[in-house]
Amino acid sequence: MTFSMLGRCARTGQFGVVVTTSAIAVGTRCPFARAGVGAALTQHRTDPRLGPLLLDLLARGFPARQAMDAVVAATPDRDWRQLAVIDRGGATAIFTGTNVRATVSTAEGPDCAALGNILRNAAVAPAMVASFAADPARPLAERLVRAILAGEAAGGETAAVQSAALLVVDRESFPYVDLRVDDHAAPLDELARLWARYAPQADDYVLRAVAPGQAAAYVPPPARP
Image 1 (tube, rainbow, N blue to C red):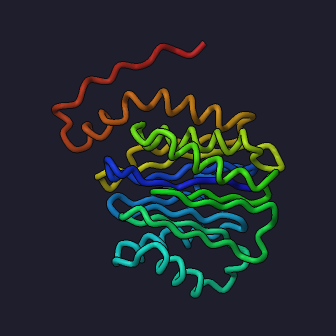
Image 2 (cartoon, helix red, strand yellow):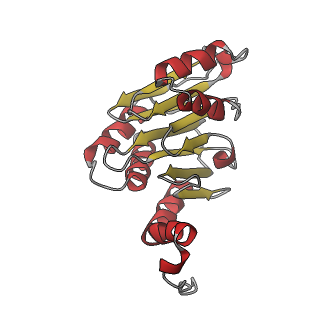
Protein backbone atom coordinates (compact mmCIF):
# COMPACT_ATOMS: atom_id res chain seq x y z
CA MET A 1 0.00 0.00 0.00
CA THR A 2 3.02 2.27 -0.43
CA PHE A 3 5.33 3.27 -3.25
CA SER A 4 8.38 5.46 -2.95
CA MET A 5 11.78 6.47 -4.28
CA LEU A 6 15.07 7.69 -2.91
CA GLY A 7 17.75 9.43 -4.92
CA ARG A 8 20.98 11.38 -4.98
CA CYS A 9 21.91 14.36 -7.11
CA ALA A 10 25.43 13.72 -8.42
CA ARG A 11 25.77 17.42 -9.24
CA THR A 12 24.88 18.90 -5.82
CA GLY A 13 25.33 15.97 -3.45
CA GLN A 14 21.76 16.31 -2.19
CA PHE A 15 19.81 13.25 -1.03
CA GLY A 16 16.06 12.94 -1.16
CA VAL A 17 13.05 10.70 -0.63
CA VAL A 18 9.50 10.82 -1.94
CA VAL A 19 6.72 8.51 -0.76
CA THR A 20 2.96 8.05 -0.93
CA THR A 21 0.46 5.65 0.60
CA SER A 22 -3.24 4.99 1.16
CA ALA A 23 -2.83 5.57 4.92
CA ILE A 24 -2.46 8.90 6.70
CA ALA A 25 0.81 10.61 7.71
CA VAL A 26 3.32 8.65 5.63
CA GLY A 27 5.88 11.41 6.13
CA THR A 28 6.17 10.68 9.85
CA ARG A 29 7.07 7.02 9.41
CA CYS A 30 8.82 6.16 6.16
CA PRO A 31 11.35 8.70 4.75
CA PHE A 32 14.73 9.47 6.31
CA ALA A 33 17.73 11.42 5.01
CA ARG A 34 20.92 12.90 6.43
CA ALA A 35 23.12 15.51 4.75
CA GLY A 36 26.43 14.11 3.51
CA VAL A 37 25.40 10.58 4.50
CA GLY A 38 22.48 9.22 2.46
CA ALA A 39 18.78 8.42 2.57
CA ALA A 40 16.61 5.50 3.64
CA LEU A 41 13.04 4.21 3.37
CA THR A 42 11.14 1.81 5.60
CA GLN A 43 7.62 0.64 4.69
CA HIS A 44 5.04 -2.20 4.84
CA ARG A 45 4.24 -2.91 8.51
CA THR A 46 6.58 0.04 8.93
CA ASP A 47 9.23 0.17 11.64
CA PRO A 48 10.46 3.81 11.74
CA ARG A 49 13.46 2.76 13.82
CA LEU A 50 15.08 1.10 10.82
CA GLY A 51 15.57 4.26 8.75
CA PRO A 52 17.82 6.02 11.30
CA LEU A 53 19.65 2.74 11.92
CA LEU A 54 20.51 2.46 8.23
CA LEU A 55 21.74 6.07 8.21
CA ASP A 56 23.85 5.48 11.32
CA LEU A 57 25.62 2.62 9.56
CA LEU A 58 26.20 4.73 6.45
CA ALA A 59 27.67 7.47 8.66
CA ARG A 60 30.10 4.89 10.08
CA GLY A 61 31.32 4.12 6.56
CA PHE A 62 29.22 1.10 5.64
CA PRO A 63 28.29 1.05 1.92
CA ALA A 64 24.59 0.67 1.11
CA ARG A 65 24.62 -3.10 0.60
CA GLN A 66 26.52 -3.84 3.80
CA ALA A 67 24.32 -1.46 5.81
CA MET A 68 21.20 -3.16 4.48
CA ASP A 69 22.53 -6.64 5.18
CA ALA A 70 23.43 -5.68 8.74
CA VAL A 71 20.02 -4.15 9.49
CA VAL A 72 18.14 -7.05 7.95
CA ALA A 73 20.21 -9.57 9.92
CA ALA A 74 19.50 -7.71 13.17
CA THR A 75 15.74 -7.29 12.56
CA PRO A 76 13.64 -10.14 14.04
CA ASP A 77 10.52 -9.20 12.04
CA ARG A 78 12.42 -8.70 8.78
CA ASP A 79 9.90 -10.72 6.75
CA TRP A 80 7.30 -7.95 7.22
CA ARG A 81 9.60 -5.12 6.13
CA GLN A 82 10.40 -3.40 2.85
CA LEU A 83 13.51 -1.22 2.98
CA ALA A 84 15.77 0.82 0.73
CA VAL A 85 18.95 2.83 1.24
CA ILE A 86 21.32 4.99 -0.80
CA ASP A 87 24.85 5.92 0.26
CA ARG A 88 27.03 8.97 -0.38
CA GLY A 89 28.43 7.40 -3.55
CA GLY A 90 24.98 6.78 -5.02
CA ALA A 91 25.01 3.00 -4.49
CA THR A 92 21.65 1.53 -3.44
CA ALA A 93 20.21 -1.56 -1.78
CA ILE A 94 16.62 -2.84 -1.44
CA PHE A 95 15.14 -5.52 0.81
CA THR A 96 11.65 -7.02 0.54
CA GLY A 97 10.59 -9.54 3.19
CA THR A 98 8.71 -12.69 2.32
CA ASN A 99 5.52 -11.47 4.07
CA VAL A 100 5.32 -8.22 2.07
CA ARG A 101 2.06 -8.28 0.17
CA ALA A 102 1.92 -8.38 -3.61
CA THR A 103 2.07 -6.92 -6.06
CA VAL A 104 5.63 -5.86 -5.19
CA SER A 105 7.71 -3.69 -7.50
CA THR A 106 11.37 -2.68 -7.11
CA ALA A 107 13.94 -1.11 -9.41
CA GLU A 108 17.37 0.46 -9.13
CA GLY A 109 19.12 2.94 -11.40
CA PRO A 110 22.01 5.37 -11.32
CA ASP A 111 21.78 7.29 -8.02
CA CYS A 112 18.24 6.03 -7.27
CA ALA A 113 16.02 3.18 -6.16
CA ALA A 114 12.23 2.75 -6.22
CA LEU A 115 10.02 0.27 -4.40
CA GLY A 116 6.42 -0.47 -3.60
CA ASN A 117 3.95 -3.01 -2.27
CA ILE A 118 0.25 -3.79 -2.74
CA LEU A 119 0.43 -2.21 -6.19
CA ARG A 120 -1.68 -2.59 -9.30
CA ASN A 121 1.26 -3.93 -11.29
CA ALA A 122 5.03 -4.38 -11.27
CA ALA A 123 5.62 -1.49 -13.71
CA VAL A 124 5.41 1.14 -10.96
CA ALA A 125 9.02 1.13 -9.74
CA PRO A 126 10.63 0.93 -13.22
CA ALA A 127 8.48 3.88 -14.30
CA MET A 128 9.79 5.92 -11.37
CA VAL A 129 13.41 5.06 -12.14
CA ALA A 130 12.95 5.94 -15.82
CA SER A 131 11.42 9.29 -14.89
CA PHE A 132 14.19 10.08 -12.41
CA ALA A 133 16.87 9.36 -15.01
CA ALA A 134 15.19 11.37 -17.77
CA ASP A 135 16.53 14.83 -16.87
CA PRO A 136 19.37 14.85 -14.32
CA ALA A 137 19.86 18.62 -14.74
CA ARG A 138 16.60 19.35 -12.92
CA PRO A 139 16.60 19.92 -9.13
CA LEU A 140 16.52 16.71 -7.13
CA ALA A 141 13.19 17.56 -5.48
CA GLU A 142 11.57 18.10 -8.87
CA ARG A 143 12.96 14.83 -10.21
CA LEU A 144 11.53 12.99 -7.22
CA VAL A 145 8.11 14.59 -7.57
CA ARG A 146 8.02 13.78 -11.28
CA ALA A 147 9.06 10.21 -10.49
CA ILE A 148 6.29 9.56 -7.97
CA LEU A 149 3.74 10.98 -10.42
CA ALA A 150 5.11 8.59 -13.03
CA GLY A 151 4.64 5.71 -10.61
CA GLU A 152 1.04 6.72 -10.08
CA ALA A 153 0.49 6.97 -13.83
CA ALA A 154 1.97 3.49 -14.28
CA GLY A 155 -0.63 1.98 -11.94
CA GLY A 156 0.10 3.07 -8.40
CA GLU A 157 -1.56 1.37 -5.46
CA THR A 158 -4.60 -0.84 -5.42
CA ALA A 159 -6.30 1.72 -3.14
CA ALA A 160 -6.47 5.50 -3.47
CA VAL A 161 -3.49 7.22 -1.90
CA GLN A 162 -4.21 9.83 0.78
CA SER A 163 -0.83 11.04 2.03
CA ALA A 164 2.53 11.93 0.50
CA ALA A 165 5.86 13.37 1.58
CA LEU A 166 9.00 14.87 0.04
CA LEU A 167 12.24 15.13 2.03
CA VAL A 168 15.52 16.52 0.65
CA VAL A 169 18.74 17.29 2.52
CA ASP A 170 21.64 19.38 1.28
CA ARG A 171 24.60 20.66 3.33
CA GLU A 172 22.99 21.63 6.63
CA SER A 173 21.77 19.44 9.48
CA PHE A 174 18.17 20.49 8.82
CA PRO A 175 16.15 19.52 5.71
CA TYR A 176 16.40 21.56 2.54
CA VAL A 177 12.83 20.49 1.71
CA ASP A 178 10.33 18.79 4.03
CA LEU A 179 6.82 18.85 2.58
CA ARG A 180 3.91 16.66 3.68
CA VAL A 181 0.33 16.13 2.57
CA ASP A 182 -2.14 14.25 4.76
CA ASP A 183 -5.73 13.07 4.38
CA HIS A 184 -6.05 14.51 0.87
CA ALA A 185 -8.08 13.35 -2.12
CA ALA A 186 -5.14 13.95 -4.50
CA PRO A 187 -1.99 14.03 -2.36
CA LEU A 188 0.50 13.70 -5.22
CA ASP A 189 -0.99 16.61 -7.14
CA GLU A 190 -0.97 18.62 -3.91
CA LEU A 191 2.65 17.65 -3.23
CA ALA A 192 3.61 18.85 -6.72
CA ARG A 193 1.78 22.13 -6.07
CA LEU A 194 3.53 22.61 -2.73
CA TRP A 195 6.94 21.96 -4.26
CA ALA A 196 6.28 24.51 -7.03
CA ARG A 197 5.24 26.98 -4.32
CA TYR A 198 8.25 26.25 -2.10
CA ALA A 199 10.99 25.93 -4.73
CA PRO A 200 11.62 29.66 -5.26
CA GLN A 201 12.04 30.15 -1.50
CA ALA A 202 14.05 27.05 -0.56
CA ASP A 203 17.50 28.65 -0.78
CA ASP A 204 16.38 31.74 1.11
CA TYR A 205 15.12 29.67 4.04
CA VAL A 206 18.61 28.15 4.31
CA LEU A 207 20.17 31.61 4.11
CA ARG A 208 17.95 32.82 6.96
CA ALA A 209 19.49 30.13 9.14
CA VAL A 210 23.17 30.44 8.21
CA ALA A 211 23.44 34.14 7.23
CA PRO A 212 20.30 35.97 8.37
CA GLY A 213 21.65 39.41 7.53
CA GLN A 214 21.87 38.44 3.86
CA ALA A 215 18.35 37.00 3.60
CA ALA A 216 15.58 38.89 1.85
CA ALA A 217 12.67 40.19 3.86
CA TYR A 218 9.68 37.88 3.84
CA VAL A 219 6.82 38.91 1.59
CA PRO A 220 3.56 37.07 2.36
CA PRO A 221 1.96 35.44 -0.68
CA PRO A 222 -1.45 36.56 -1.94
CA ALA A 223 -4.36 34.96 -0.11
CA ARG A 224 -5.64 31.81 -1.79
CA PRO A 225 -9.17 32.15 -3.22
